[in-house]
Structures are given as C-alpha cells and as structure tokens.
Length: 59
Image (cartoon, rainbow, N blue to C red; front, side, top):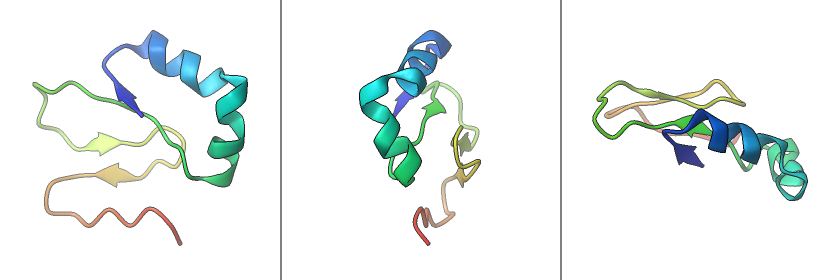
C-alpha cells in the first residue's frame, strides 16, 4: 500500500486487521510521491521497486 502521508502508512502498519497479511509477507508499504522519480523502498521488506528492475516479491 502506498501513500504520501506518513501518518496514513503508520496507521495501516499498526491496523489489527492487516497484521496477518504483513506477517505472511503479502502486504508491504511505501511512501509514494508521484512527482518524485526515485525508486520506491518497501518499508517492511526493504525491497526496492524501480523502473527496469524486476519486482520479484516472493521467494
């Protein structure tokens, strides 16, 4: 899940109904500013999403 608001992401990260998905590794979060062209770092896994870089999220 992405948002530009750190408050929203912190709320989601602590939300009880999302915890099982976070623990399973199927849900991650990132700050996203659509005006920024920098790669996106996922906050839980630390993986980087970038143009031209494959996004292998499982395994």
